[in-house]
Length: 328
Image (cartoon, rainbow, N blue to C red; front, side, top):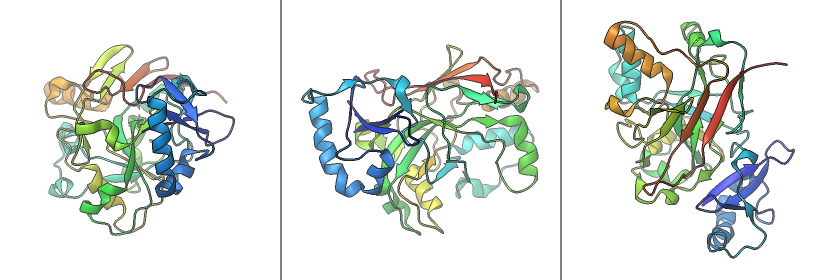
């Protein structure tokens, strides 16, 4: 199943059921008005919504409209929880190596997770407004899962059943603000502005055999200013799968329906696949030659993030955004 949230003048948008080929969409107010409402009552509502989805794909719904990514908010325009991990530990290892720091062994057995701001996500085709290029503007191409209610203390084995949806993420980072924040010992805040998510959220079954061991075994493709930047495979070198990330987040607290949990920057040891953020490319340059040559993003730069299936069809639609100067 594929789902989107259209702009309708309200904070949480209008839930839209989207066809598998991303060609058609239909509102489903008799089932749920918003995606959060659907997640709150998933077990009750998923049956009738699945039947309607089958009809939509069969061309049996007369009042559907052409699907328009430009009308999409992030699938959850705001969420009760946004926790982002760093599941690709080779990426963390590289960043630390570039600054001459050893990586603790615990990083390979205990996931890194931070709690991000979830009250205001940016739409997937909207500009990214920021106050200064001096902040070190970077994109991070990621995947995220959305859960239903998850009980505290759940095991890795059981956590996967609570993953209801997947999305793509642009986790915007302000690299030059990060060191001073982390030095305070209290984590990210100003260095992590609003994130963006793909136009469409999909149920795991839409990925077929590419959803194995709660990992997505497909390349995540990023373009910077129209040029291919990276296409690492999200199922390769993922130290912690999504079930493990969910269980980690729920170790000491229950997770409410509609919680979003991110993978962190997709990264492969095979560097020929490119990177999913500027920081990684810069670190590779430092390791190779002692100096980072690739600049961070400036106003007017554009990033596009997309994942295609084995037939070349877009699964989630595309995050396609330009960085602009913020103006009150």
